[in-house]
Image 1 (cartoon, rainbow, N blue to C red):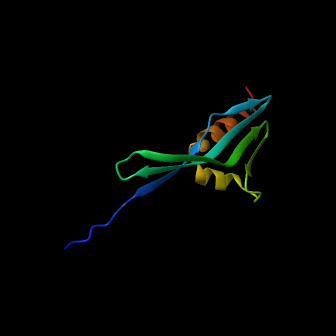
Image 2: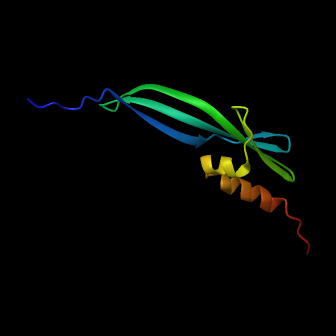
Length: 100
């Protein structure tokens, strides 16, 4: 008699960047955790989307805000969501003063 491992479900967790939101001269990038519970046959049982933080870009200022109440640095949010690096670099580049 052989015993086989029984798998009822598996959990897939990803961190994703949401669509940017513009509010006046401020741009907000939401970062969320997406948890997907699947059966062994790859059928989805449940999906949970949890907001984690926001990257906020204002003229001359960029900062991160976490939703758990803990302080968050720009470096920390970039570790969670590397695609935000391009948005941050673009904002920093446009804030440079050019002299002809």
